Image (cartoon, rainbow, N blue to C red; front, side):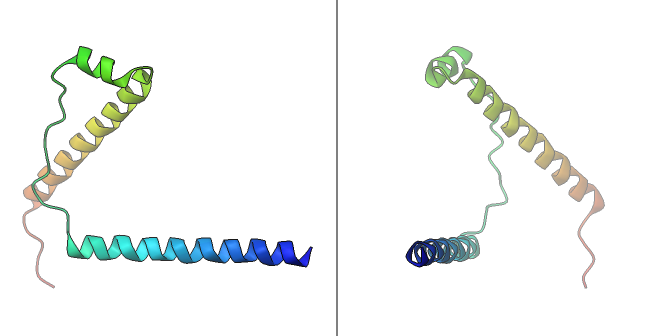
Length: 92
């Protein structure tokens, strides 16, 4: 019983350490390679038939992913236009 508890505690501690390491690695990657300002504005699909063939039995999933990407594109464009309308932020 005690051995199982220690084993479970060890696995939980290992998972916590690995999660913390993943967070630190992602933060280091973002500092080293910051996202570019010129986002790819291509949201369109050139052929619905090709996408239907590529998605196979996952047509609904492909449609959901495309819809989410479209929402993100238009939300980012709205935010970018609002920022441009306000002008640069005043210095602190």
